[in-house]
Structure formats: C-alpha cells, structure tokens
Image 1 (cartoon, one colour):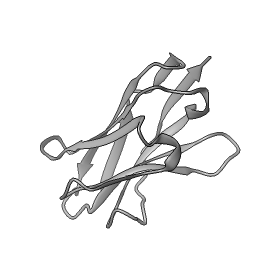
Image 2: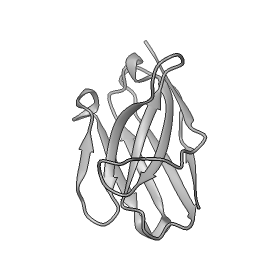
Image 3: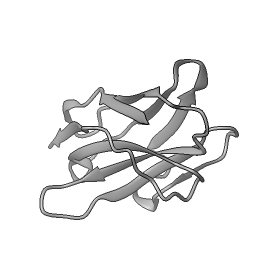
Image 4: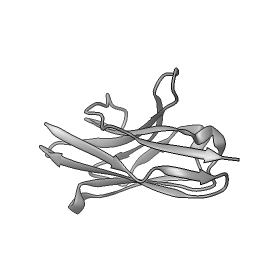
Length: 119
C-alpha cells in the first residue's frame, strides 16, 4: 500500500501564495499519476490538478489555471502544489491521491491539509 501525507497548509490573505507538499511512502512502484483535490465542509470533493508520474503532462480544473502549478520530485516521492494569487474561494481541505492514469480513478487519500484564505 501507499501512504500519502500532505503538509504546507495554513492561514493566508487573499493574493498570497502557499506551497503544499504530498509525500508518498510504501509501495510507490506503479503509480501512474498523482492528483490534488479539495473539499469544503458539506460539499463534494473537487478535483484541482493532476500530474503524470512518468511524463510532464498535467491537467487543472479551470478555476485554478494560471494560478496553481502541480509538480513532482520522483527522487523524493513528493508532489507539490504551488498556489499563487489565492482567493477566499480556494479555502478548503486539500488532499492528495494516487491513480493509474492522469484521469484516475484516484484513491489512497491522505489526511489532508487545511488552506484558509481570508479577505
């Protein structure tokens, strides 16, 4: 099994930046892609971004394009989410997950890291 641990969340003001990290351990062989999702209490989990584990291909939800960048360091088994120009509507619990392809299905969820953006 793969264990995923997210970190890097916090309380920031609108317009600020944060970088989230997701460290993978365990049986990481065979991961096809990694993704970031977010969830606001009472709402469904929302896809944010994904990156192939073996190529530079990425994809994003429209609301974060141009502001967020997903990247990875295979040597460290870590995926990052650089979030710039944060908005209050980005406030959520952010999770990372693994999947067989860039389009999922994704699973093995971590515990999440909270991002709160104030006005």
